[in-house]
Length: 263
Image (cartoon, rainbow, N blue to C red; front, top):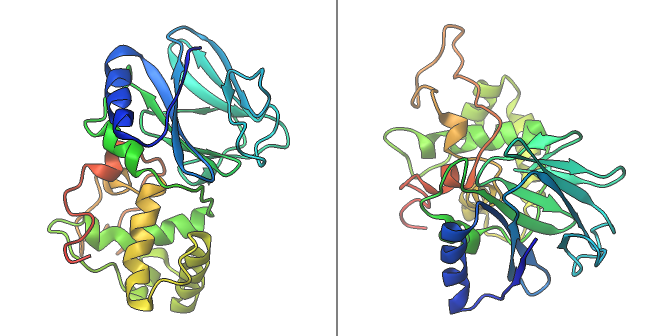
């Protein structure tokens, strides 16, 4: 596998544009603590790519002490990339822990250790804003529970509605949608504020910042609302339809209403 190293400079954008036109798949990593961009070109044939700190790995994340010597593997089988974690290691895809082999979609955000990685597979879909996606990718990894993710989806529902609203959902509306108490919603929101390290953000800005950070981390996006009713509509049981689980970077950047005006 050929490996390209770069930092955030004017040439980074050109490098990504070239990669979009010259390779089938690649991974963009954010190297800590300086938040440098590093691009890894993936081969266009079936096989295994080992990921870890060991210099003998194909994709080396040697700047991250939280990454194991061999942390995970990217397997290409019948043209489809799959991520597999090594025993005892943690891999997060779009904010959700994975425990088994997980197929990857173009635009998925992976976290290994403290390093976020944007996965691109141009054979399975082309992001119109791929270079923007790489430059705007969240600089840290976030892992949340499925219940917390459902709270985020409900919180953002008015923002993704048609017509969109500038204001996230109220706690009472979230509680009704999820069938929980308002106190439970507040507890989950407090946990999310800590997970995204937003404790020092002014209270009036926390909910909007929370949604912005959740989108950048790949936790929520337009796919969570695909096929669901617009704000105010309900299904036959009086509940809004439940969102789907997966989200891609294209979903998170294609909607014109985010960030809301006035931020």
